[in-house]
Length: 581
Ligand code: GTP
Ligand code: SPV
Ligand code: MN
Image (cartoon, rainbow, N blue to C red):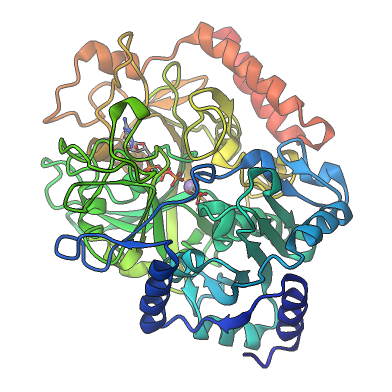
């Protein structure tokens, strides 16, 4: 229980509405996690994986209709529709509350109501924020333990500070027609019903740390972003921190823990975070960042010894696997892992390739970040880490070069706002269609994108030590549909160039769309990318870019009067430069 009056009252009201059999306040201990996992096993929601190869690892199979975020059922409920913007689904707070209340009525009968106090960010960091998630899902409790600083210490901080985000979650009956993820940014509240999956249910993650936090960040002058944070340490021991925004399932986890190729002897990548980044300009004029999370909820398919060895190394103990396949001897398995043939697919049926992939394309692992071999001790630093560069990147088969540097902060904001990417299995809708995804925040910005770009632009000139902004694309394909760039660990070569640019150590080719590497400046020692492929990866197709910049202009204009003049002016500048080119 708690001494916090408003919290106690809220829990009382929720219990009255949802009618649980009992109420349990989570303390966050290891013993509690083990007991919860065993309880979930008894409920049929967990099964133990091979204890010899994967001690303390659990398999969870979700409802087959509940396998990803549901953007079409996710709402931002501000009093005025323009404040949510065309980038969000909107409902009046009154209507949304009434709808949710009718769904919540008696929904926890026969269940336990868990109270999860949690802290997003290092427990002693002034940049951190707390919340309380109420849920009837034991699976959510287990995941929140790994993904957030959860339990006693978080509750103490809430009692000390007074304020917290209220998150109410029930799996309901998992009926997709009775599924809604509602946000009330003006009241710092989240209500989620009918899904037990990832970002729909672990409310600290996308709901709190992005949608609500981005709304707060705007009014308080900081940034809440869908970004990984990594440190690159040179052989001399100098560390540059980089934040990178890539849309869902577009490479954040992989980049965050990459292992440099052989020729980068003495270089080291440190992982701070793989999904979310909160940043604020410090007194020294630099942008300081924390990872609000404490764990990884990563995409399983494609994770292998040759792509992401660090991820594989952290997944052989104390991890949760959701919707993966299993081998005959009960080890977790997914497409791309190795050439074994699984025995059972993600639905629990005998594996038959005719039924599609063995692991769901959005199957995931949950693991505490301390298990990552490249885990940085700075991940717990209350002040965060100073960011040297911000990198935007989408999944683009064509057009967008491997890497380019923005001309300025303003141009960098335009680059971020112009991002587009092929959609992935991380959302329930169609996969593989190119859509605009500014700053990788399309599904996560808790307010009007026009206001969001204005907020980003407001940092222009506040300091001369702001991060440099870059754009990358690992996903160019050739005429045969094959990736042109080797990616994964080899992306180190691009990070290397980015750092050299930040340090002013190399020049660049100035083009209307950005500054590109000069021939020879991108280190290609030890890889065999044909010269013609490299040329194509760094080519600027002026005619195609004229079309692209015009499309970008139309997209920016679709936000009407909320689109700031500053970003329109920047679009015009690039557009005119392309006309002259
Ligand atoms: P969310 O957790 O959904 O936010 O995704 P994420 O951005 O962390 O993506 P993740 O690193 O999990 O990668 C998603 C998929 O992209 C995986 O199947 C990876 O194997 C693949 N991928 C990651 N990096 C690269 C790369 O450099 N090249 C290629 N070709 N594929 C990559
Ligand atoms: C994403 O979709 O960007 C994820 C997974 O990181 S989820 O937690 O479901 O949002
Ligand atoms: Mn994500």
